[in-house]
Length: 331
Ligand code: SF4
Ligand SMILES: [Zn+2]
Ligand SMILES: [Zn+2]
Image (cartoon, rainbow, N blue to C red; front, side, top):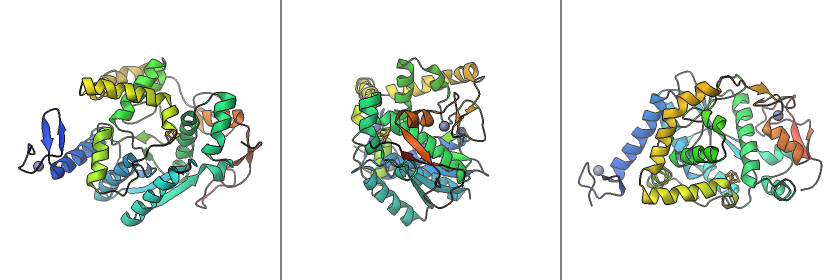
């Protein structure tokens, strides 16, 4: 079958639209740029930090942010958190270093082990056995905290993430199934309920592109990318919701799109309802959070990880008041 726009062979089909390689790439890029402009995700005076891991979503969003920022003369850089997931993160970081080197992108890598003294792999057995916490819960809390803290310290005014349509439909369903509408209220193309100088707003240029489209984009662009999944994903609640939504999408094409669009319809009301809840400052680490103590500090306490005064940054820009954490027990 041929492309709906030219006579080339179609390599992509969606709801009756057939596209060849070149028209698919233009379609993908236009959709992402439209999302950035429509929601004001990146503005002229922003300093943009792209949260990246070297996986396909993050290389796709890094590439598109690079195109947008260079075209509009906006400063940007990449930031990766190395959780310490052996056999997986090391491979994606190798791809990422190569990508950034080839494209002249400034990359900062922060290792959880350098700050906390333990890797996610080392924490996870204790987390599961003693506290019933899944690796993704631990990883998610730490990544969010590390990304915000490091992006802010590096001067970023926006934190770009690679969340796509699949991720967003999953997150909405997960929060809904858990009865957590306040978390839904903080979602959307720009995250957060209220502004706080300690919190770098997270923005999502891939918001309306699917996992499949992102994967195809990465493949057609020839990104040197490891398509392996994190070994921990199977243990997560997200995997259950992801598989259920994939099944629904197979029977009802466009279902994920409908979920995200329905969510966006109710988002203004949700934001209005929950906007009174302001950020608090964590009593232990000074990071913005919803309660007295942030999730990262609560987790740290539960896992028995103690502070030691060493510089936070692996890139040498650490502040004396930043603390690196070492374990009080062996995991
Ligand atoms: S799948 Fe879970 S453990 Fe792996 S990187 Fe994602 S959140 Fe972290
Ligand atoms: Zn074409
Ligand atoms: Zn804290």
